[in-house]
Amino acid sequence: MTDERVVAVWRDGAAVRVPADQPVVTAFDLGLGRGDGVFESIAVVGAGAPHLPAHLARLARSAGLLELSDVGGTAWRALVDSVLAGWDPGTDGVIRLFLTRGLGQGLPPTALAVLSPVPAEVVRQRTDGISVITLGLGVPADFRSHAPWLLGGAKTLSYAVNMAALRHAAARGADDVIFTSLEGQILEGPTSTVVWSADGVLHTPPLETGILPGTTMARLFARAADAGRPTAVTPGTADDLLAADAVWLVSGVRAAATVHTLDGVPRGDGGLSAGVRELLAR
Ligand code: PLP
Image 1 (cartoon, rainbow, N blue to C red):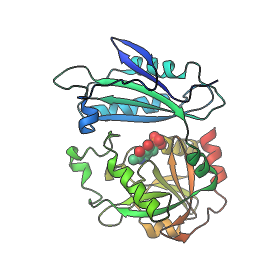
Image 2: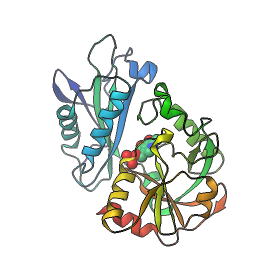
Image 3: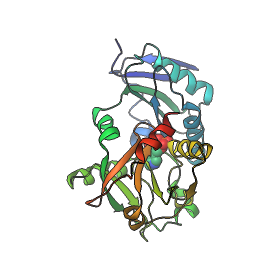
Image 4: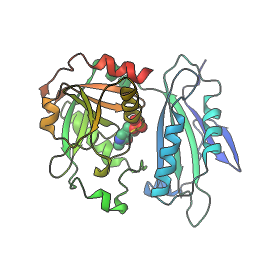
């Protein structure tokens, strides 16, 4: 029988399993007080986390952007092995890795891993698709690439805005959000990368807009290229998405969720979603 929630923390050079209801950080942890840290969400497939290397690479990159000291790949793998020990391979799970500045002042960072089942709502969205609204983020599309203090491209713990956007969408009867720039360019979802298909080409917005480099989008585009399907990095607008053959919000835990309604307008997927999911499952 799988524990529903599992926690492991990095202590004195080792991964230590901790009961899920026990505290693992002090009240002065800067991850708590300032959201000063980074994280990753990693799908558990069967008994393992096959996409861990791409997530560890992004975690290291995010830590670098925040000038956080990192515990390193060996520690993260030990934490992942620790939470996976005893996990039921029949349960869809998600591992979250957290790295915070700890108490600051040059003291060691806080590093921990948690594992829990994928929420039922996420499983539903994988199969039923999602309704999405566009919401402005208020920054010009080219601003964040010249503004390192805005931490574009880093997966920081400061996700309060992303969560507020999702609540705003829910209040308007939608499942999810696509953020747009000041000029109306498509950026990303609060927890996903935007991918659309037009004229047989898979498109995604440029990273220079400050969006997070999605590991799932990268995998999808690599496998599409292997299968001879063209891909492109393309600035786009909501009108481009409305005119597209299909639109997906893509992430490790939800895979490719088909957008069936955009800003209240119902839209199809041209029968393309099955092929995209098949590429991701390879
Ligand atoms: N963009 C943002 C803002 C995210 O939070 C996420 C995932 O959590 C993604 C994109 C998708 O990233 P990945 O495909 O690596 O899960």
